[in-house]
Length: 255
Ligand SMILES: Nc1ncnc2c1ncn2[C@@H]1O[C@H](COP(=O)(O)OP(=O)(O)O)[C@@H](O)[C@H]1O
Ligand SMILES: [Mg+2]
Image (cartoon, rainbow, N blue to C red; front, side, top):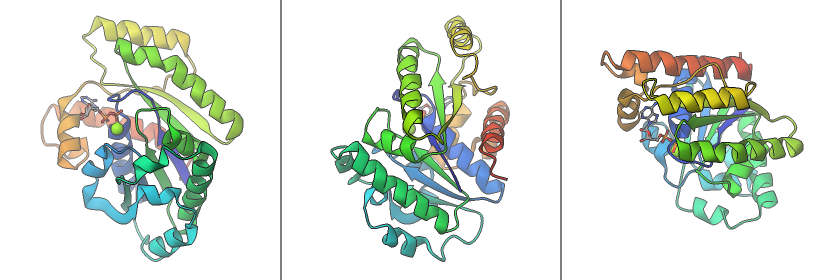
């Protein structure tokens, strides 16, 4: 089993859209996918509400790993998305110590492997909090969707440093890189920022990006991937999102 987390302390950059679309793509590849929504805004839980597992994200921080095993044993028997939904109790977790919360989260993620999952995708909240730290300490891969606006650009250095620091402790963590999202190819500011990033982080920019496309927001609102949206304008978005999923799938070496 492989685990990937999307992380960026900035909100609105495409973390949830990426997790949800990768989950739908992996489902179509025949995988058994768990999605853990660690954001109290519960956006991934909204889009994936038709895929409830009945297990809650805050329970991933409990010490009782046997309860998770009992819950999922016998329920993970074919290609499916199992949503471990965001719940109100998640907010309490931010008050706990990072090392204690991380240890519990890691043990519960490891137990998901015993229950038959092929892949775990973790969506995080836009903050450098306990939840993001726990997810990074447990993960094999991290992907950072980014936006090409000034406020987002400001935080990128800090995000890269945070990931580099976690990698000193979680040595198996691989940084898949930064994925430009909501890119407006007609906006000179976006193109300038993209150019700056390629110069500053040549190794960290993934060879795929997603444009600013309203069909993606339509899809997230309707609980379906963008390739199920029947509009001509959705085709380009679908191709871009599929390319991102392809890249992630290949890099994660799941097959
Ligand atoms: N490529 C895109 N083009 C247009 N809108 C998008 C795109 N990706 C996401 N959105 C919209 O932008 C908002 C933020 O995206 P989201 O994936 O929720 O970001 P995050 O999880 O980083 O906060 C959402 O309302 C979503 O519908
Ligand atoms: Mg989100």
